[in-house]
Amino acid sequence: MSMPGEELRELAKVRVANDMAFHRGVGEASGNTFMMKLWPVLEAKMTLVLAVEQEQRHDDSRACALHESLGECIRHGDRDEIYENLRMHVVGSAEESLETFDAEPTVEKKPKATYFPAQQVPHRS
Image (cartoon, rainbow, N blue to C red):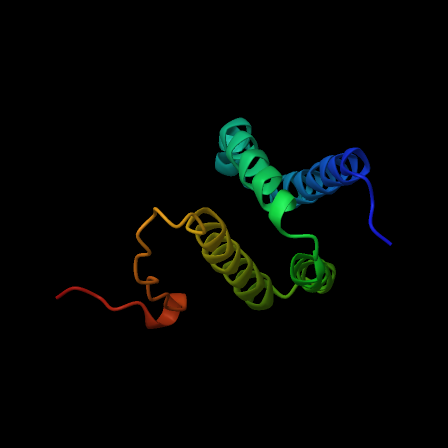
């Protein structure tokens, strides 16, 4: 069953609000004062990106699965798993956002960056 445009827009607003509340909650719970000082800027940028993505993507299963996994790691207090889940979420979301914004035919696609886990980051000599 398809929803009329206005209902879809309202649902997208709720999704974005819930997503932002989740991210803010993780930031507050982490005690990361630097991130929380930057929160107004992060929130503005993330809200714009999420709003655009919601117009093009109606399946939130990937984001929900990542958020659930991260929540479980936080509940268990496993710092390594929390780090890995955050890294996967940030990198995956960044790549997804780039794909969303690169969907315009006039935009030249750039090769994806290579991401390394923290322990495998090449060091300069």
